[in-house]
Length: 105
Picture 1 (cartoon, rainbow, N blue to C red):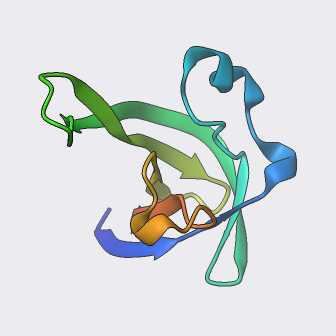
Picture 2: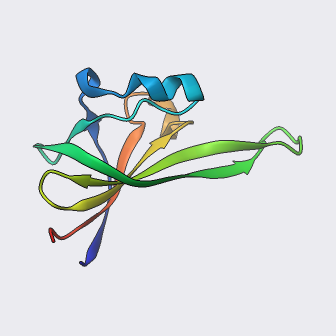
């Protein structure tokens, strides 16, 4: 499967979020999202991980910057999506991003 880099914002279907993740400090991952005017449904989560970075105010603490999800969607593609804790340029509407997508199996 060839992986294509995308780097575009996605629109989560808020009616399908997994709110149980909020209790563990993770973002509420959508089970459906829109990208490029097409709806995708998450069939399974393949793996998850986090990116961390140093404190920007000088302490030694590290903070989670992005929550990553590698998911299989209903088209057969495997996609890497992520949630930005600190959205770019302060726009809270663009916090979920599609990083890459593979060709269907």
